[in-house]
Length: 468
Image (cartoon, rainbow, N blue to C red):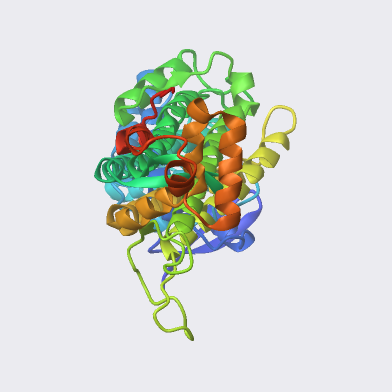
C-alpha cells in the first residue's frame, strides 16, 4: 500500500495514500481506544461538521479572509461530506481527550483532502488547501465542535420526537380499543376502585405526550451556538462580523433556526443546555420504564397473575419450562431506560467538571447524549411495534375481578357511610362472600334496583354521586 508523509509540530507520520484523513486523525486513532465506537457511527454528527465547515468557508469568502477559489472547493468538499459520501473516513473514538480537537481535525483533514482531489492535487498537498489555515479558518475546536454537536443533537431529537410521539399515539389507539373494558384500579398494589382499561392506556399516552413539549424546549436551548467565539469567546482570529455571518449561513444550509449566543465567553464554557436535555431524556426514560413495569404486572400470569392483558408472544421464555413466554419487550425497554438514567449522571458530572473558560469534557457529554437519544428512540419504536400495538384485553376476566372485589364497596360510602361500608368490606374479606350478597341479599341495606343504579359500567368508570 502506498503511503504519504504528513507532519505536525510533534513530528512526521506515514499515512495510507488512499485515506482522506491525515496525521492528527491518525494520532487520535493511536491514542484513544476507549469505546471502540468511531465518529462515523453518528452520521448526523459528521453531516453537522460538514455544515459548519461549509458555512465557515462561505463567511470567510464573503469577508475576504479566504481565497474565493479555495473557499469554493471547501464548500463543494463539505457538501460531499454532508451527503454522507465520506462517513467511513471519520474514525476518531467518540470519547477522547482534547475537548474534541481530534473530531474537528478529522473533519478539517478529510475536507481538505477531498478539496485537493477535486483541484487535481494529491492528498496531503496542503499548500493548496490546508486543514488548519483554510478549512479551519476563523475557527477553533472550541466553537466548531460544540456548534456541530448542537446541530447534530437537534437533528437527532427531531427523529427521536417522532418515535416518542408514535408511541404515545399507539397507547391512544389502545385506549380507544379498550374503552369498554371494565377493570380494577389499584393503589399500593391493592384493589382500589373500578376504572376502564381504556382510561389506563389513555393515561399512558398523555404521560408521554407531555414529554414532547419538553423536547421542544430543550431544542430551543440547544439551538444557541457560539460559532465565531474561536478559542474562549473573545473572537480571536475571526474577522469583524464573522460570527453573525457564519450563523446566518448555518441557518441557511441546515434549515434550522439557530441563534448566536449573546455572550460568546459565557457560551463557550457553559454546558447547561446539555444538562437540561439530559434531564428531559432521563425524565422520559423514567416514565417509559414505569409504563413497562405496569405492562408486565397487568400481563402477569397467565393463570397465577393479574392476566388483565396479553402481550404479543415474541419468543419462548425458558430453556426448561415449556410454554413459558416472558414480557421480553418491556424488559428490554426497562434496561434501556436504566442506561439513559445512568447517562444523565455522566452528563451532570462532565458538565460540572469544566474549568474556567472551557469544558474539556464535551466528548463524553456528546457520547452520552447521542447514545441516550438513539437508545430511547429505538426503545420507543420497539415498544410500539413489538408490544403495544399487539396488546389484547381479557375483558371478561377483568370484569369478574371487579365484581368480586371488595374495592367496589367504596361507591357505597355516600349511601351507607364509611363505618358501615368498612364493616361490609371486612366481612367480605373474612368470609369470602361478595359485597353484593352481603349488602343486597343478607343485610338488605339497599335494593337490587339501587345496586343496579350504582354499579352500571358508566357509573363505575365515570362515578356520579348517588345519595340515599
